Length: 116
Image 1: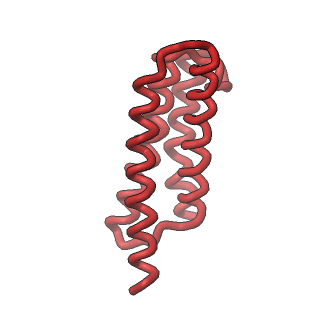
Image 2: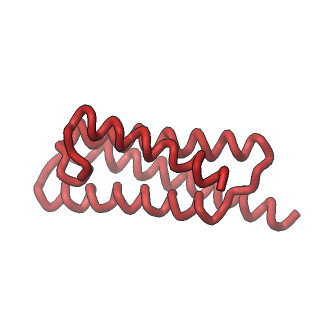
């Protein structure tokens, strides 16, 4: 339960920012810069919480992997929408590539811990 609260704190902070600044609950309808700010708050907050828990010796839970998947899925939906509308999506592609690299790193560390 503690891990779920820690991981969802970044989602709560990003959605509070979304409500206060953009007056919406739907991040898909945001324009490019606003979505990137929301997405960076979400991604950075989540990965900071994962690395803090990982440095404290806690194992990465299934909940964390579900959060990683849902965050990546949100980025992919926005990427597909941006491509369909003909908008520039370069920064989002770079963020998604970095997110994939970090996710692979986390999965490999999870596998290494299970092997020990």
